[in-house]
Image (cartoon, rainbow, N blue to C red; front, side, top):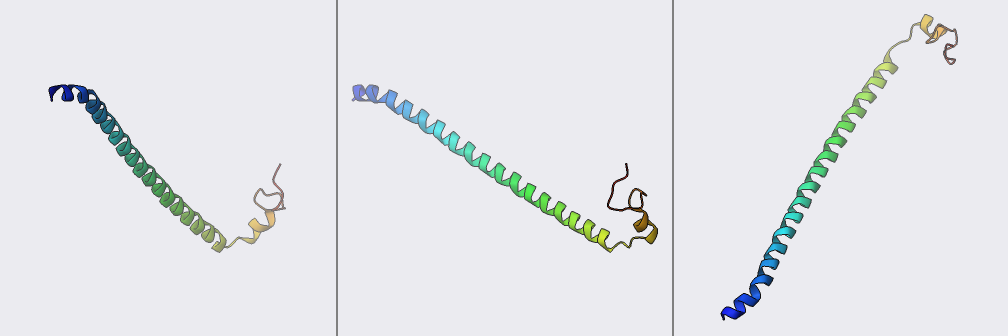
Length: 86
């Protein structure tokens, strides 16, 4: 009986070591996937908030009346709003 235990002990130790390493790999992968999901969900929420702010800013700009003198002179005071100053 003792000879059987001596013969199987290296295999049992290697099996336990393999189980321990694989368990840690699977746990690390699970934690990494959770962190990636958290990152992308936060990024998506942030992007959605920025888009909503941009849309609100654009609608505010669209609702702001333009003075006739600013409209005639253009942005750079060239007299043509479509041509850049230069």
